Image (cartoon, rainbow over all chains, first blue to last red; front, top):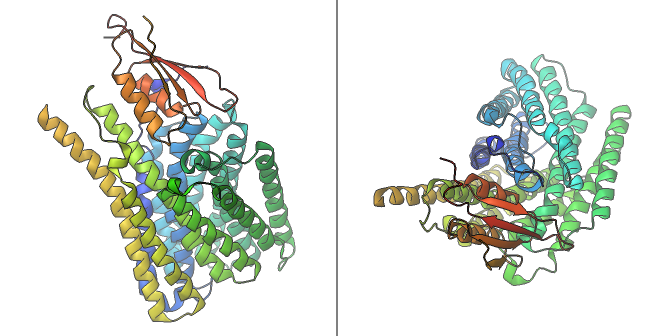
Length: 414
Length: 81
């Protein structure tokens, strides 16, 4: 077994900045909905709606995926990101890209769109350059490496396609609608769902006590989703109005959601921790989103999938990762012999459940605001989102604060 | 010097295996050995042990995925200045 090289090891806190940005974007999305409640949930083409969708997919989900990957790759696959010293700059570039894209989509202003059209693809390509060579060169964990590599590939494709669309809009050229759908399919199914399903292979048995999917089944699923998505995108680009792409998205998302719910069914109640419950509610919402998309209810599917289901899955993981990496950082800084508080002391399960409660209360409001579009209901949904993401951000911050307080006490005693 | 200490951490939910393994490793005297049985190859643990100057040697994964790791605190004379 090769020895670990310390000079290559990034600090444990590397993913934190991405994970902490996630609730900030959640609050920003709530503010957007509060201001533009009358239009943001009516159709997918309103500027406020496009801006809100990208707050969810890039601000919340994108930050969560970037951060989780940086934590997951060394821990589970043994791959150190190359040039990890550039992570703070990548974080700044990515979030600047999200900010100008959201501002550009909202105001339809030229320069923000043109900037985002370059910055966001560059961020994804940078992440790819950091991670893909290591994934390619690593040994073992073939299924994990294949899933993550494919998801990264789809993420880069989606970002390049999205960047192209932003450049078109910035130059006042109308969007080819089939390209918008292709971008959405690549991003949501190829990047987000594929990555979550791959990571679930480790996260679900380890942290939720579920059984595992047989490797052959997961490999077949991965191959079918990958080829199916590519074929559906190609068909969609040739024949506008073809239903293959939405059907591919329905099949991919539903098979992941129902499969994971099936795995969760035998976990004894005593092991239903906050992460398990986040995933149960998130997977149910994702399954409902797939059914809504199959029924042609795109807006409902978007609210359930992008506004509720997928954010709950990554929010639950962030509540595990943040206190854990803070605990590792503490461990590295306190002298030998000092008794450390456990990870659960930094962020107790009760606090994590409060986050779920807040998200769980906000979710029906959001879906109701799409089903019955009324300004007051949209603004109530916005308030729900505001509270939910504030509670989430407070929980993450309190875990860090508990660590820093402990360090200060140790320093005072020394 | 060898030690009979062996910790089976397979049934603990994460992150408890890592917490217990690091606590036990910190309690080792110089030259003392500890063996843990982790539910899977514990890469984050190996990284932390290396960071803290321990020698850690993981064995081959067993049929259930578990991995036995031998952890040793180096003698003071072996510790780099």
